[in-house]
Length: 393
Ligand code: SDX
Image 1 (cartoon, rainbow, N blue to C red):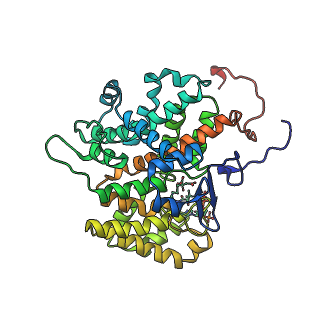
Image 2: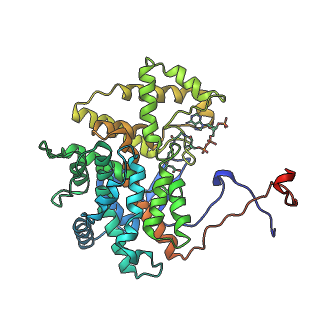
Image 3: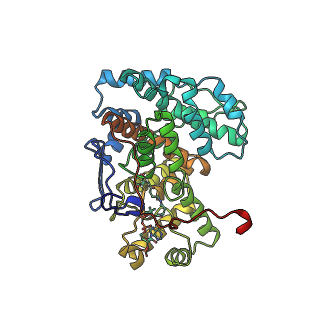
């Protein structure tokens, strides 16, 4: 094997690419999309504008923004055959599995997306279609789980409201979208929109580097995000907080479990590969949680348990030494719950938010003509040995 191979499990010290999309500073807790701070964008922008910024590299002019939003609105409807795919899933199918399948199935409706040498206009069309249809796929994956008829998109609604209406409207009763809920959801989508080379984005880049279609690459990213150590953590946080609540709110006992090396339990929503002081998104989401719950008049006992855990962890040497602080997933589930989003859909919300980031990173990788991702290894298996027939084994 030519040259020295250095093994770097989890790529903790490996840079896989150069990128102009997102900047993180783990020590200072800085997150910027194309140079704009997450604090500024969360407060002043909206999710579709942030999507345009991530994908095309600049804040859209009024004309660009209007055209982008109109194109997305025009493409929210999905092919009726998507319902046939949906009918193939049992109601026990987790919405993330349904979502990744529906996204990948788009290659069947748009076979031109399989051509790696498509024009940039055709790539832009794939991007518009996927951003437009993601809320429809997400809401339909939920309706499949609860055995209710799907709702068609309502193009009079804005992006977040359209999703909420498809999620919660049903033929038996009137449903009006609460603008407080829609605005909170739009802000959460912004906060999840990109995060440089995290596990699912690195997956999108590696799969896309084989010149697989954008739909197949993003479907792979959805599956990587599903894991409880990554995007699945928001669902795991709520399940953990519920367990602590059932257990009488004994946070000290659960902190001890998280520190016990013989116990696989980890404090979900704590720790981060890059942020070693605080996750700036967690700070914004924690404040939003207080605001949204107050506006909606929701009292959620697990929010108090979450705050108690955070206070204890900030004082606990084990957590302080390892620089373990709340991450983006620690408080997001509490807001989703207050918005009426079911736990099984929390990671789907993360995928909806991360979509423009995955698209931007896939596009940058392809435009930079990056080589196929193919790492090496250090072999530790058996030396050469002769075949042994069955009768001699
Ligand atoms: C996301 O990468 C991204 O940017 C991801 C993300 C994004 O936007 O894409 O930010 C979204 O995935 C946030 C993370 C969500 N995951 C969780 O909340 C799950 C719980 N946290 C972890 O399992 C862990 O902290 C990771 C996966 C987030 C990071 O793991 P690392 O960087 O590989 O760190 P590690 O596992 O090597 O841990 C270092 C030490 C170990 O102890 P020692 O061996 O040094 O004694 O810290 C301990 C770990 O045991 N540790 C924890 C812990 N996280 C790390 N101990 C208890 N509870 C935890 N949560």
